[in-house]
Image 1 (cartoon, rainbow, N blue to C red):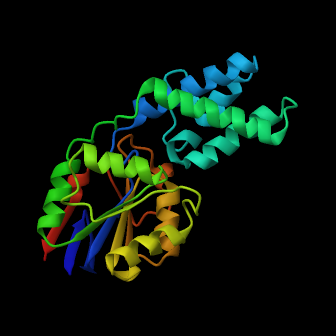
Image 2 (image 1 turned 45 degrees about the horizontal axis):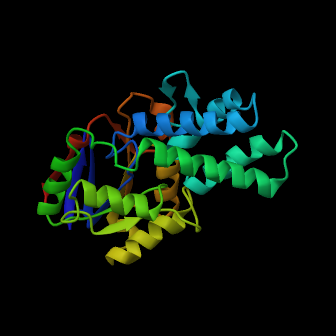
Length: 244
């Protein structure tokens, strides 16, 4: 067990730390913005006039992505359903709407590629430091399990990340079931864990699972995005091991 200090708060008896992926370890803004823009264009080509409302729903305004918006924090399944709801408003049947949304997102992914976005500066170093201190590490993401696995492999994090939890057909954030699943996989109790993420969903999930603490990170300085955090940091290296 270790003692972790962030700014003026200390967390004792910590065995594991879980990280979100998009917007926390991975600088995915450009990728997600391109994904939403391409999907909206593909759908608009079939249903003219729906593109702009879809972009707003995704959280995309011109070339700006809302880090708390749909495409930033929702699971792939939730994004499909939200897009399908806008399509259904035009009079299409529900199953047809789902099919159109799913196909557009699939084609958008193929168009922009599946190579993971770059790590935020300091991400690799903090994972190495925490792992060297004997702390178990994991990722809990709203991305699919395959995307999480690809991210870990691409950035050569397999030596540090011991559990990789994504969202496929099961529960999504903020359901604490995801957090409890990660704890079980590592063999730790929630009370001996911390969550580091960039969304309200991360904070609520960990809090409802009775984690020892919730650390919000906002690279863009928007505190509302991490409401419910025990503290908010702006750089990952603010997470320090003071006793291992």
